[in-house]
Amino acid sequence: MAKAKIQHFLLVFDHSSGELVDVSDFGHDSDAALVAYARCEETHASNPSMDILLVGSDSLETVKATHANYFDGSAAVSRLLSRFTSVDA
Image 1 (cartoon, rainbow, N blue to C red):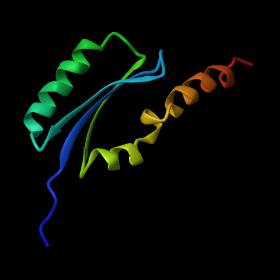
Image 2 (tube, helix red, strand yellow; image 1 turned 135 degrees about the vertical axis):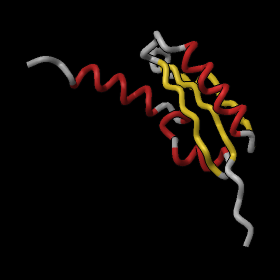
Image 3 (tube, one colour; image 1 turned 30 degrees about the horizontal axis):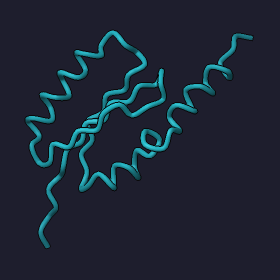
């Protein structure tokens, strides 16, 4: 049985807007994925609201299942709720 090659996906999520602002598919090109990840991290380094993720998986559908909170809006809801539950006593 042949082993499936890992595909690389770059996810850029903006917690301030609650939106997944970019999904890039690099296929099997790990070098290009790492370069893009490093550039994106550098671009958004001063913005703590941005999550930059480089995910390896067999497909984008699997990434959508394993990282559903970035695709279905629940990451934004969690961040908003944490603001209300972390009030100083």
